[in-house]
Length: 266
Image (cartoon, rainbow, N blue to C red; front, side, top):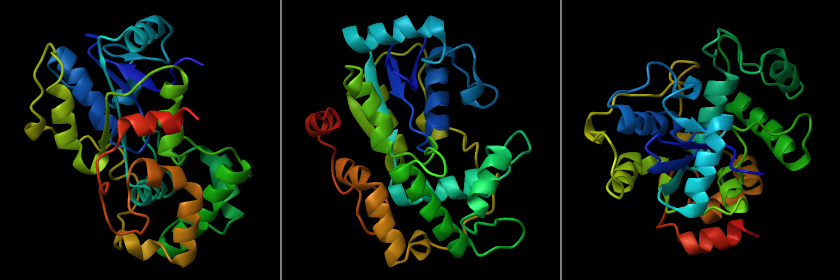
């Protein structure tokens, strides 16, 4: 299986398991800066050099060695399921992507039309999001009408692949306290360049792709939506200590890494 979705600095001090919609752009840019003293010019997801990625054949032996033999700090980052799925909706469903097209083109549009999801022009954000959530549930629970997309697959599912491959995390960050989390990670390793986290530019590549969220988080989730969220993301709420009710932001407590590894390994 290997270690899909893993990035590593060229200095081989930081190994990061990417989780989509969980500050991965910012984290990737911080890793790049720690090696080169500058940020990548463009979307870090497009970088072909200057950072190791499991998607590159030449990077795989180096990444595997650091995970299995040690010598690097292995970490990931998760996010409140409520804000993550909303971010996915406004970016990937409502938004126009960097290539000037809808995400996944006509395939996704056609499938969403079966659920009555229409996001052209002025639309009811709450109603369309709730219909989208039904679609998400069907993809995750039943694999229909398509397999679940990586952007709305559970955080636990992404995080678990590294454990399944024999790896172990030294830290799991929360998007809601990213600066503090990254500061703690960077304080534990020696990097070629110091990163001033207080002066980080904004790297939200999805910002501006779609309409602004018009309502507070909790307004999008009625009783049925909350029930669906518990059905879809039960492990995320439990493993990463997020409140089961919408409206609260960060985790309710520290993540127990021993418990996390034990539960992910099942």
